[in-house]
Structure formats: C-alpha cells, structure tokens
Image (cartoon, rainbow, N blue to C red; front, side, top):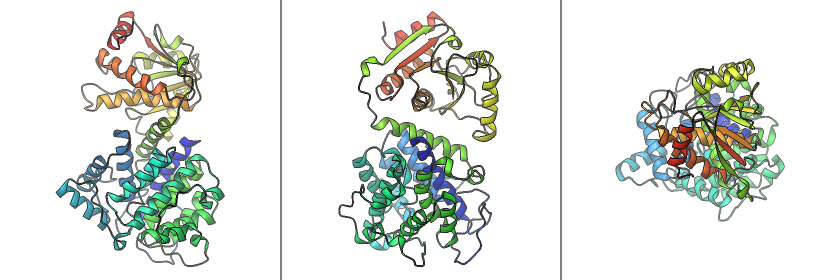
Length: 481
C-alpha cells in the first residue's frame, strides 16, 4: 500500500505540474482540456513539466544519495539544475521563481546552504511545490518529518508562512501515505500545530471549505487553500486536478501541490493512465519514487527476532534453487541474454519473456535503468517471483559502487514488499560487466547484512555461485569461515 502511495505522490506532483504548465498565468474563465496541451508562456510540449518537478527530483535524489537530509547537497543539485539543466526536461533550466533564483545566487557566492529569503513579502510557494520527497522519506518519523520539512523550505524560503505551510502539508502527505481517511486527514487531530502562524491555522480550521472565489496565485497561503479545497470537494484525483487548473494564475504549481497530496491519497493506481502514459520522463520519475520507497521503508522498520535471519552461501545452479525469490542479473533490454540471464530465461520459459515484453511496452520503453529492480513471474522456476536488476559496467559507470549497492538493496526491499521470506542472489555484474569479484563480494555482503535487520519478512538470503572458487572469493573478501 505505501509503495503505491509514495509513487503516486511524486508522479501526482509531476502530472499536476505538466497539466497546468500550458495554462500558467491565464485568468479564468477559459476552457480546459482533459489531456495535456502544448504552448503557454514556456511553450511546453505534451506531458512536459517545469521547475516544480525538477526541484522535487533534485530533493528526492539528494535524500537517496545521502541516505537522508543534506542541505549542501540539495543546494548543489538545485544549482546544477539552474545552471546546467540537471533534472530538467530540456538541456537547460527554463522556469525558475525569483526567490529561488536569489537564494541560489547567494549560495553560489557564500557557500551557505540556508540562503533562503526571509519576511512575509517573500512567502511564495516555491518550497511547497517541491515538498513531497521529504514527506515520502520521513513519513514514519514525525520528529524528523517536521524538522526537515522546515529546513527544506528555509534553504530557499525562510518566510515563516512558507515554512509553516511546508510543516503542515508534509504531515498531511505523510498521513495519506499511512492510509488515513480523508476525514482523518482534514480533522488535523494528528497534526503538530505548535507555534504555527494564524494564517496557516485559519486554513487548517476550514477556510478551504468556504463557498468563495479561489485564486491560486504564487502566494503560499493561496496555493495551500486552493489545493485543499479541491482535495476536500472532489472524490477523484482527476476531478480535483482539473478543477484547480481551471482556476488560472499559478496553474502548474497549484497542480503540483494538489498532486502531491491527492497522489499520496489515491495512489499511483488512482492517477489516470492518459496522464501517466504521456508524462515526459515517466520512467525516471517512477524509478526515483521507487528508490524513495525503498529508503523510507528501511527507516523505522524493526524485526524483533533478528537471530532467525541468516545469510547462506551455496555453489550450484541458481535456476534450481527453491527460494521465494530469485534475482536475475538482467540486461537493460529485459529480453534475456547470456550468463545467468540466459539460463534463467531458458529454464523459466516463455511466461517470463512475455511479462518482460509487457513491461517494456508499458513502464520501461527505454529499458530498465542500472540499479532499480522489477518483479515478474518466475515461470517454471521453483520461486514465486523473479526480480530483475541491471548491474553496472565496471569500466564505464563512474558511480559503479553506488549502482551495485542499489541493485542489491532494491532487490531485497522489493522482495520484502512482496512479503517473501527467502531470496537468492547471483553474483551481479561480475561476468561480462567485469566487476572485480572481490570488490563485488564486499559490496553485496555489506549491503545485505546491513539491510537484513530491517526487513519485515525476508529471513533467509542465499548467495549462489557457479563455482567453489567464486564462493571462496566471497568468503575471503568478507572474512567468512
């Protein structure tokens, strides 16, 4: 459930941004198309998103890369987006708010990450529009959630109003991820309101329920109130989003803000496919959200019987292993290949290939990136599921350590998400991708040994080697007798 909601929140942000982008600064009334359109002040393409999503991706990637909150890394990524088009749909940044631009200029000159602009006159929605990764990463830890929601705003927006709105909205998104009903979310019973500004309290008390004209300008209170009004009034992601976009003004951002909460509440499955299918760089957004889920699911999950969890080393053919999950060291095409990949497809049969072809047509038209993991049927194998992950090319991927770590981490957490108790790994990337076996062994064991204490269901991990020599390298590299 949480995975669907976490992915829904980040994808919902991007969908709201992309749908509203072509209408930005328009004044109502006007007709709104139920599909993406081109044009607007930035001459956007179909399904193209703007700075809201770019900055959210920068924030999400920083949380993933640093295993938590790192203000300097966030500002470095924002600056890279601003100057070089990092996480943009184009080769350059084409949309940026004045407050963000001023904060980044200050950071570049001073190297001080908390370069946000203070004062009520700077209470824009630029920190709210990118907020959801904070809530998705820290949804299980309220104290950290509140602390980092505030700090994530302060690095560009130090206005008390902007900060308080981020604190409030992060708690709403976290509540939606946890599965709270709409009534529970809007009751504010679980919200920490300590020292919040009266303008924010007024919205929380129900100003968004009033029958009045809503004008979603760049002012953070206007954006918050309009997004909550649509969330309160409508019973689907689609109807609420179309309504906020029809109100004009800062349409991309109010769409992104609404999409964060509504996406978490209705889940990824509740967002119309006509919007997700046409969303630019959908695979990037999806895989980033998956990584956020895998990281967040580790944060506060404890297993009270760790002594029953074991790592095993076997020599043999991985296709014969009787395990709930078998991991396939796939290539990016997901269509079979040599080595372990070829053996698994040959033994597992055509059902695996058929499901992989479907994934290529739907979720991964450009192939599976290096690092993420995806599950399919196991076909004729003895496993319940087959998890595919693409290892790094040692001589070509400069960040090969992080990528190999991600292969093991994402595979393990995905198997745990499927409520499996056992998983079998091959030696990922040590074949044709030429990763040195001793280095790969240290990475594999370190990652699995660290994460295993936090899995809900996985109790047994098996590393399967084709030769005794390879098994001995693994043992020696990790000082296992």
